[in-house]
Length: 171
Image (tube, rainbow, N blue to C red):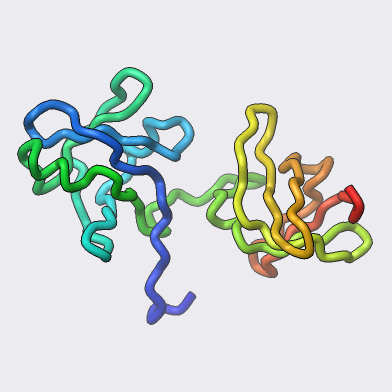
């Protein structure tokens, strides 16, 4: 990506409710564990058709979710205008992935090819199943391929934008 191209924000959560009267909001976090969302600041919040930068002043786990107090939001009425908005960060805010680990956002759009050189599709999104993550491919047909390194996933080449898999065409 050149310096002239704007980076695409990475969605990490959504504001889904109000907490108290001082402008705190409830957060649905897409990070794992959910409290990792609190490691990022500033957040980009999608409001009025554009991404707006907001500092995370405070945040904490609360029950099964997260609550947070953002930058310029000081009361419940202001916070109400944020309900339903997505929370994102810039790509540069992510720590580099460890060897053999990948951010889901980096896998989206990659072409998946099997051992015979047959293109199975492109990664549309991933699903967490508990046992392992699953690649959801779009192409001639939708395919679900378990993201199991060394057994199913043979190679992830981010530079070439290809994932090589041990997976049959008719499976």
